[in-house]
Structure formats: C-alpha cells, structure tokens
Image (tube, rainbow, N blue to C red):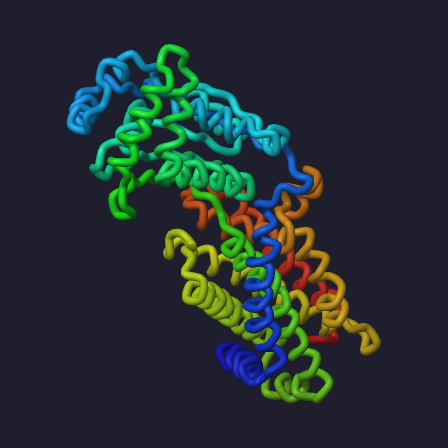
Length: 442
C-alpha cells in the first residue's frame, strides 16, 4: 500500500513537464551558466584579499662548471675558461623578483621563502593559500635544459589549499606563465645573456660567444625542455573547481523544489477529493505520508544521479569517490523526503487561503539557497551566517558533497552528516505534531 502511494507521486512527477523542467533542466542550465561565469570570477583579482604564498627554495645555484655543460660547450667551441669563471645562476630568485615582486602583483601576492615543513604547518593553520616548491636541482636542470639538446623534465610542485580554489588559480597561472616562458627559445637565449652580461668580469666577447653558442644550439619545437607543474594537495584534499561547486550548489537548491512539488501534489489530491477517496479505501494518513516519503526519497536520489552524471559527461569533471558520493546522496535524500512529508502535513492542516507551496518556492527556497552557499561560498560571509548556512539542510548537504569532491574521509564528515540528520528529524517531528494537533485530518 505504501509503495502504491509512492508510485503514484513518482508517475505524477514523471508526467509533470513543469516539474521536470524545474528540477532537472534548470539546475543543469544554471550549473553551466554559473560555472563558466561566476565560477571563473572566483579567480579574479578585483577586490580580493592578499594572497599569501610560501616559496620553498631548496635549489642550488646553476653552474657552467658541471661536466655535462662543459663537455657540450667544448664541442661547440665555446670559451671554457671564461665560462668557468662565470657567476652562478638562480632561476628561483628570478621568479620571486620578476614575477612575485612585479609592480602589478606586489599588492596582491605576499610571499615568504620558508622550509617545506614550515610551509606545511602554515597551510594546516590556513595561513597561506599555496606552496610553490622548487626541487634542489631546479636551477641546474633549467640551465642544462636551455643548453643541452636532450629533453628533460623540470617539475615545480604546487601545493594548494583545498578551500581557497580561486586564489590557487591565480598562483597556478603565475607559475604556469613562468614555466612556459622558461621553455621558449627566446628566453633561453636572452635570459641567459641578461644573467651573464651583468657580471663585470665577463665582458662583450664572452657575451657574443654565448650568443653564438646558443644560436647554434637553438632547439626545435620537439627538443625544448619540458617544465612540468605537479599539483599536490594538503592532507589528501583537492581544490574544487567552479563547475564542481555549482553542480553541487544547484543540486542542493533544486532538491528543495522537488520536496515542494510532492507537497503540491498533496494539495491537488485534497482539492480534487482524491485524498477523501484514498481515506475511504482504508488507507490511513500515515500510509499516505510514508508513500510520499518513499516517493520523495527515490525522486531526490534519481535527481542527484541525473545532475551529477550529466555534469560528468558534459564537463568531464570528477566528483571524488563514487561510493562516498552515493552514500551522501542517499543520506541527503532521506532528509529531503522528511522535508516533503513536513510540507505535505502543512498542506493538510492549513486553510484553503494559505498556500505554503507558493511561499516556499518563491520566497524561502531562494533565501535558503543564498544562505546555504548555492550562489556564493559561505566562507565569504560572517562567521555567524556561515554557522547558520552550514546547519540548514541545503547548506549542510552542499558541504557534504564538497567534502567528498575534495577527497575527505567519511569519518571526518560527521558534522555535515549530523546537521543533515538533525534537519530530517526536525522536519518529521514537526509533521507529526501538526497532524496530531489537528485530528480531523485522520
């Protein structure tokens, strides 16, 4: 009997073009719109706080005295003795001085050169957004990549704070731009010359010799040394992209609309006297509400599956561990079903002139979506607002989805699960109290 009532609402939803448009098509379109617009603005530099960055500089200065370099220069007829007296080169210092201290960035980027251990400690305390780590052989690898014909990898490790994605995008762009410049033929020649001509003990003759040598050793496109950026994450957590964020944000917003449609079907049943016929068939109000609970649970779960699969297919983005994601979907669906039961109970006991569904859809859902972070991250709001936003059903659900995407273990998501569960308990308790006080519903 319960399944009969559930299947009735499921069939009604599947035939309701307006409902399907709102709970499936609208979140998909808004995800695309917000993901490619507001999501990109997460990494804009307008009216943003200073980005604190830790630079781990373990690289020894590069030298022309290394055997591989000396052997190659000798084969090119270079001036070995002059080069052996040349100053050592530090490309990491070039990055900090010419990129991070650039006039257009000095008010945006605040960096400090620290050890890797100190940098990790600062990130754990949320003091920095990114760690840029250069390996000990970085300078020598870059120099040899500029001179030697062999292709080599020169990795730069970028460790990103999982909750500061837009800042990480800025830092990542800077590192990518620097590494790309190091890979160009022009920079291979002219940067090296700029290093060497600054040294007073070298002189014009050595500069011309190096220019000629670099011209002869100029790389073709497939010979250029590749400088890779390896992205890591703190404590196994990864940063969230705009598309990932708004996929989850829209899903938790439009699940509220689904709950309201289940309640709207209850209103139609009462108005069309269908509810009276159901009662006459010996079905109790509890059977009806349990059917609505089951139907809303299944519909919400299917809604989540549809939206996340669609985002995966269209945008080719990942959502973390699939098992954990499905578990969160199921837990959230249960609480949404409790909300649907509460709204249905409100519909049963309210007077004909009061439309709870209209109020919920047009006023409460947009407000709850804003408060819960579906449009803007709650991290940008005051702490008191953050606490409220992360405690309501859609806000707590959004945090749970984001934690799964970041790779957080389920054991560490207890606060979000507790908030989601408490919302469900409150909704089902209020529904029981409403019906118990108005016994004529029975």
